[in-house]
Figure 1 (tube, one colour):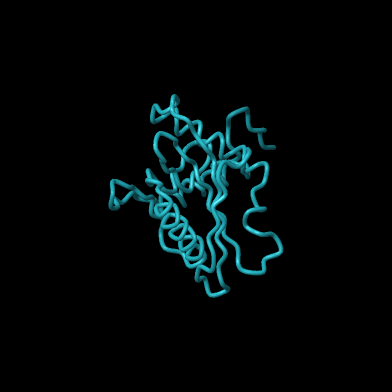
Figure 2 (cartoon, rainbow, N blue to C red):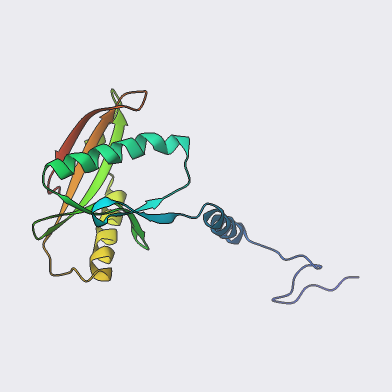
Amino acid sequence: MGQQPTAGATAGSHVLMTARALHHSLRRLYRWLFAEIELPLADGEWRRVAPPQAHFARGEAAEEAAAAHLRQEGHRILCRNRANSCGELDLVTRVGRVIVFVEVRSRTAGAPVPAHNSLTARKRRAWRAAATEFLRKHRLQGHPIRFDLVAVETSSEGSVLSVRHYENIAL
């Protein structure tokens, strides 16, 4: 009757895709459709801006509160939401000669797991890898570094209630 397709051939005239290949194709399409752009900010900062989405509003408010808090403590914001092949860095700041990688965690008041306890081992590994890649890319390997966590508590409406800064956390 019909011949079996040989290696590399397609069944009929249709291309067969594995679930993984389809998933990657859809992710590329999504990234192309909703591409992030970089906008300049004051003080030489740059921020990656994603398309506006309602569920990111609370996280954005927490990050703004964290950045304002760090500025008051004498940090100079170098960049925000910097993604590389290893992960994403919420904030990268500088205090004197020390490069500080800051993870911002936010929770609604009364959440079962407080923000400062929500940093998983997997996230810690990705955070360290992203920081190492950032240092390599920007040729900052000789600088002392530190990893800080800023925990932001918000109300159910999204307003910031408190900001706590944890310096030099262990990874």
